[in-house]
Length: 613
Image (cartoon, rainbow, N blue to C red; front, side):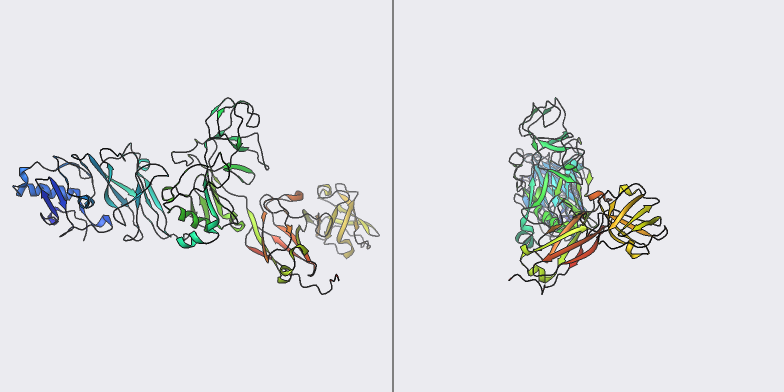
């Protein structure tokens, strides 16, 4: 059956029964009237009930003995007057398309109508929250699917007219929600019909089951910590800061930053000084636990998704976060270990604000949310929205009023993949080290080899200032001359702008003099020389260590690495050497590019010669 909009589909003593003594109207699931899900396709509109009652008063003398039950304010707002009331809860549940006030009881009902389609109308369950606060419970709507039903907003003592949030959060589907007061700019909710956009569909990124997320790694290692803090302004002298204020101190730099770092005051007070370091008015400034370095700068966040151990992919963090938002229990771990900044309080997952979304291949956090401990291969596919300094702080739900999208500089990610032989060897007897093949390189046709004498000749250049590449005592790798003796590894001396003397490190004689013309390449700080530079990972740690696993993932700060004077944002030719006691020494040459997920294979074999009896 369908929603009744025509009073001709109603009949006395079948769908509608009037008790003039008790002054009740009973709506029954009978005849043409049903209360099936979804609400938008069942029940009876209040307008149809009102119109039917008017018709029945014209034809039924017994009804006219008592005063009329309804006052119509308009088709979506009615009052039950003259001491009339619905006979029971079922009668209330059957009313559609209008809010109403039962005057004798001083009860008010708003009708909530959802706009948009739900993926599974007979299964998908929307729910609502009538009181503000992350520690407040929720109520399921009476029916599943698209909404059209009355909910109590005032009963004479309990007043829920100042808040209403509606949620739709189903497993493996896109979430939706609406805040009636905020979204529709209302001063208060009244007894009328309200339409709220609320729909869902399959979520191609939210695919894991609750059982998998609740019971298996890496999900069981994941945590969500809410942080205390307010303000988020630039520190200023002679300013009254409340307890829990967070400021950006432009003077206190860290890790190459230029904008400053973030600080929290547990006690508050009036500032006095040049910054948090010498503030004599507030002496308890401590580092804000929600600051995160993205690139070289520090940004503030107040909800941190992280792990107790290990890492997670962007997809895994997203699935875990969506699962938390469907829980009726407290999802705040308070796990950052900062006593003054932990203690945000209870946050029931089903009413917590959303945490992140997928936009194409990118995981995008909601304002104030940071995802830590992310798998290196996903670093380039995450975007954060911070708490922007001096952006009016947080709203009533502790969401930043102003947020700015931030993303990491591109981080290349690759895997060092080792042979089974060296993996099986005792870790302490193995090592690997990654070097740049060179730092700077120049190729031109204006290089010449002059004045050859024994193992030395003079290298001249018509365009490159050689002092920008080399100093006396440096090593140079030269290639491209016609005479092989003029190519190879050399030490440098008498370095001036247009020339330098180069001496073969192997002591062999150089070749004959050569004029400019061939395409010659010179490289500084070359691998296979004492000048070789060990490559740092994205955390500025040497890529070196013992062979502890078959696959060892590593990262490289493609956009920012300037080790030894190299040019950031360019491909990095590298060499990896690996050795063990009972496995052979090998090296491999590779190129780190602006990409992720690349394997660098290294295959030492068993060494049949090594012996230490």
